[in-house]
Length: 258
Image 1 (cartoon, helix red, strand yellow):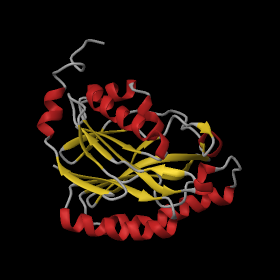
Image 2 (tube, helix red, strand yellow):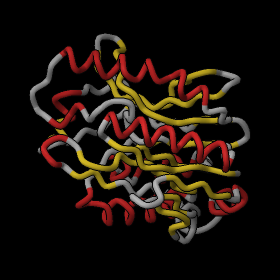
Image 3 (cartoon, one colour):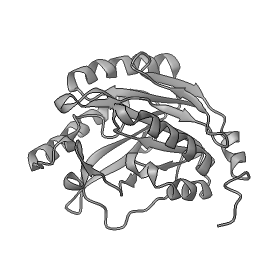
């Protein structure tokens, strides 16, 4: 199986250039799955604690406008997250697009930070009954952890027990925390017995805030980094062997009785 991870600019003008380059990369490398960052199609809303309904609705509108661009990539599967209103709640929801089934809902984000530049408890709400259920996409199975959720490691194991092949983590994290996140991605691959994939925002955000980039793929059992994006190499496509993730379910620590 061939997968693509990436880092995309928070700045909307630079994002357009990044997207053009990503399309060229995809056309050349022809991946089976592309993972995008957390809510990639608008500037990061939760940078300020001053919530406005106008910006909330703009975030939804911007993402809806880009759905056709996702479809035009010509990829078997594209995973992303976007703001959505459901039952009067403003949610951050992960979706997968496939040509056969269109845009399918995967998971609603359950854990939100509340600190400078990440005022997510102010901006977003939690679904009344959040679930961490794996989903079959074609002939492989995925679990979703949206950014901060990756630190709640019990869910990585929970997904591993469900037999996932890929643990997908769209994120929006800072330059100063890159190493912490990469280390977490290594551990999560071991705990879940699955390939852990993450894509992130990059470049400069509001008030000079620096996003971290560093999209990764880490492998099951060892947690080794198979690829890591950078400002000089913003997109990476690699081949992975799903036999490894399936065999990992019989090994430590997945074989330890709960």
